[in-house]
Length: 186
Image (cartoon, rainbow, N blue to C red; front, side, top):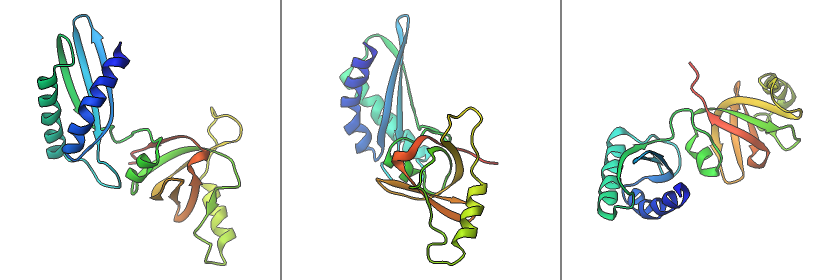
């Protein structure tokens, strides 16, 4: 039932959110007795940047008006409109493009496909690759063959993400990423 409501809300709210200049990341509904909560996650459509408070307020007002008009949720409900947050999960190429300039933590399969691009034009490639390798740590709880990488997203496209790790760039295929999230490092 909650999935059916979420699908109906997604169909209703996608054009509303896009019309307000944002991207509908997801909708979750929960019910407690006769009261419901509708959580609407929105973000910028693509690329780096931040969805500011003024823009979030505009989206929230547009979503609220659309829900009032269509009345798709039975009974009383609380509407929550927010962004995915500073330490969001990354799972699509759009997510990685949105993370450009931010710190991330990736769990990747150990493959030959990941490459250090810093030294591609430089004879010091092997020394740079060793330095980048020093920043990789295997998670004690991770399965064998997985490596955890922490760095800043320098670039991303539909197939790969480029991380800046200790001054070196490393390209990782999105197919090799098992888990990814933005992190806040103090």
